[in-house]
Amino acid sequence: MTAPPPTVHAVVPEGIDDPARPSGGNRYDRRVLDELAALGWAVHEHRAGALGPAPGPVLAGIPDRAVVVVDGLLGVADPAPVVRASGRLRIVVLLHMPFAEAATDEAVRRAERTLLHAAAAVVTTSEWARSWVVRHHDLPPDRVRVALPGVDLPGSRDGRCATSSTNGGRGDDETTATPGGRGGRPGDRH
Image (cartoon, rainbow, N blue to C red):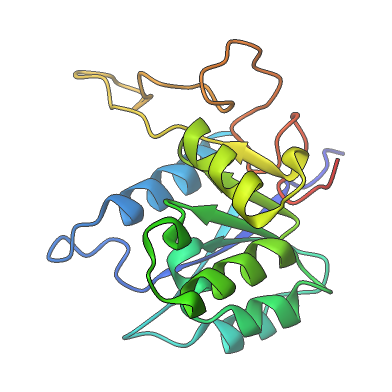
């Protein structure tokens, strides 16, 4: 008998697939989730945000010990429910950009720091962003990974991207495309 596929829940913006509201962050979220599914993960999407339910009730409905990928913008906008859920869920934050880096409002900096410290793992889109959040939010480096955005190859039948490094392109690729790194399950602490 084969084991069931690993499962990941994803809390994403309610407009993630709305062509009237294109967003690099939404495209990145979609691609990460599609790649996890292509790797054999069972992906359960939960829409949240301005026009959808708040993240708190969404997180409350996810089973204990589940791996949950949370869009960074949703998490920074309201970190309290993510922090409350972090004791029972393995939270992985997809941080498209360090919002605190450009924020003039100290509340945004505190919200991001609180969110990232509650997460079991953080995935950034570049080595620069990874270094910035490790340094400015005092995060353990082994909890922060890089999953570079890619470019779809023209005419590619499998939809694979031209960029596949998950470690910032350093060439010592010890991680996989899973947001937990080291070939492990998303949210595993190493």
